[in-house]
Image (cartoon, rainbow, N blue to C red):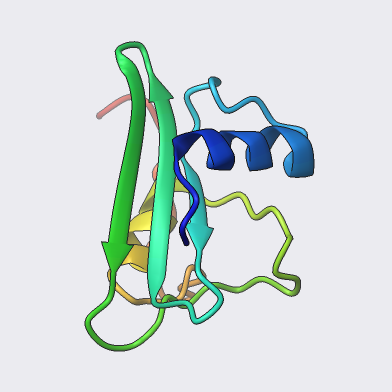
Amino acid sequence: MRAGIQRLATIITADFGGDPTDGMLYVFISRKADKAKMLRFDTSGWLLYCCTLCEGTFKWRCKDQEELLTIEPRQLLWLLDGLETQQPKAAKKVTKKSII
């Protein structure tokens, strides 16, 4: 978890074939799963968020340490709260755009 903005951006490009300036939020979890770094490029520049848990670990469901996992915004909130990214009893995502 020593990597800074440039190194994380290089990992996104070289290892995952992504574009770090595409506006997506990229989350990196430490091996012990107690620290996270989040990188995002905004119109004003780079944003680097760091999060360290006082106790417990992030519930990150990845088979491989190098696997790229896509999650929804609400799953990110669950992850940062220390919950599993898959919540079987969670309400379904609202996709309708109109109110009756």
